[in-house]
Length: 327
Image 1 (cartoon, rainbow, N blue to C red):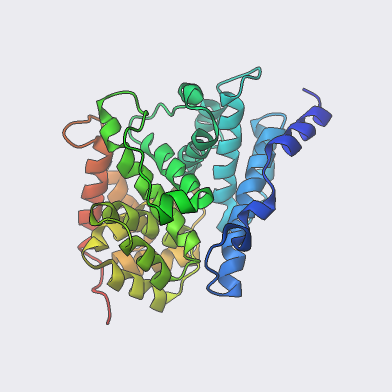
Image 2: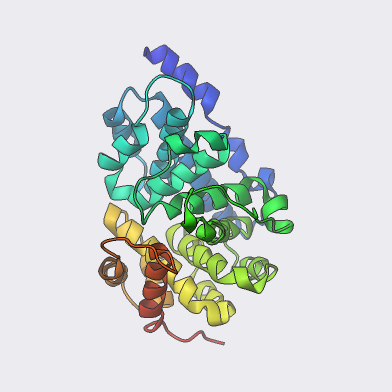
């Protein structure tokens, strides 16, 4: 495919940066600094998406992705994964792009790549999902996390204000799909950090507006976003810990996933180190070790999915060392 056609494909397929503006989305703006952080995250995601759909091959996309500043680079890889999954899911020549990415330059960013696939699932017809469905029996649930984030971010009225939940989610197509709503809620929780503008009081109020049986998953997502995207200082994170109440283990589990994602990809940042220490009582490296040791092998789903059993074990281990919330 010629460079000119790839450039046209990029223009046709890439959403406008305006779609990630807080004012466009109607999200809370805590401060100019928080606004800049969240809008940079959104713009960087779209840049990664554009790099992937325009690039001649993985190597070219990788070179461009690696130029993104460390703090935001993971979001670019997430966007690139969405772009590649969109190409795989559309009726155009070629396939296997996302699996090749996971086996190649995307491997250190496995968490973010799976989440990016979920964004594509939200945009593609459901009958095309089989062409991009992740093969990893454990991390595949992160795709539904990505799906949930997308729906809450772009369809906020429906998924957050009205708190819609699909009563019969169609994927995966086996008995484990009973867990799908939980994974989607984890992604909605991540989106609440953006919708609430990184303001822990606003975010906690949003979580509390949901039914009690959804809050554990939502707080897990909030913890992941607070640790990975950042935007809150020490006092704010301690306030978030206080507001989480008996959902502190789930909040800490989300922080653990975020820490692991940054450590494994070599993209560790000061705000992730602070969040891990404050909300888990550990360094990001220690938290990553907990996640690694708890990871099931082989992956066997039972009464609980292996993914949920893994999350619960992590929550128990990292929350036991977390400090008590300060009044």
